[in-house]
Amino acid sequence: MPLSSSNTKQPLLFPELEPAKSILPADATVVVSISGGKDSIATLLMAIETFNRQQVMAHHQIILEDWPGTVEYCHEVCEALQIPLYATQAIYQGYECLQCHNHYLTSAPEPHCRKCSCRDARFLTQVSSVLDLVKWREKWPSLDVRFCTSYFKRDNFNRWARAHRDLLGPHPLLALGERWKESKGRARLPVLRNRPGLEWIQEWRPVLSFRRIDVFRKMRDYQIKPHYCYKAQGMSEQDMYDQDVEGGPRMSCVMCFLKSEDQMRTSYQSEAGRPIIERGIEIERTIGHTIQHGRSLEDMLS
Image (cartoon, rainbow, N blue to C red; front, side, top):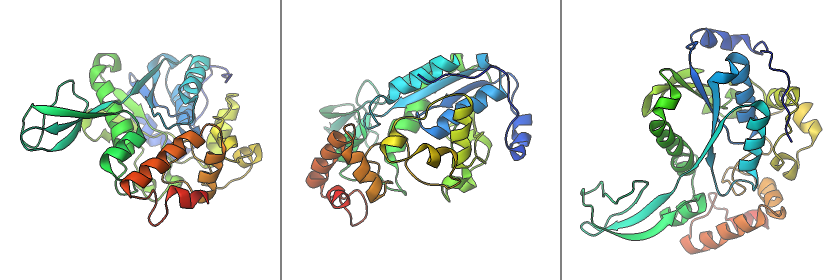
């Protein structure tokens, strides 16, 4: 069971983040997007250190291909830290428009074709997981088109935020666990900006300057054990707390397209990852599109 440290506020680790902190609204309601991974947990801890605990809540976007027990882990962490947690799962209905025969997905309660505005439709399927979405689109996500993130994380949170606008108060902040050192794309992210498509919410990234080692150590300061997926993918405590390197196992779908062959094989060898990856192999055979360019799931496991 994860345990929290004292409630005393800690100084921020990185002075370059202080200018953004100084312009954050003092009466903000902070919603931390928590995946269960190291970066989002460190972000939650930074939010608690920066604001009064009563101003902080967490939101988890449920992904069925996450490591089993992830929702329970997020609940345990938030309970130990005395932070309310909201968890929602995105579910879509797939239709064929009876007028223009367009196939489309919608989370709305009734069908509505955006192509021709027709509301007459034939129900085709329900899409409630990343693999369902891969099967529907007949393609895997990629760095250029990360539809798994847009459908099941970004749009999921945005729907929840719109439905709970009164809960979020006049100055909501969405705290995100993105770090500059993770990738070239994230290296360009600002500490603070309005959320695209939801301009009344500001995005705040309090761990942008953190190294991988810093987020693990931040969790250790609060006696919070990292999600079991890191050790399941071959990461030792020395790797977490003593090795100042980037990369390595990620808290993501067990068959994430960003995994290396070694990481995919490790996921497949685990009791949790095998059935999910095997379903991915079946879908891949059906759609004829490989998870990585020129490499199928079966290739990566061989």
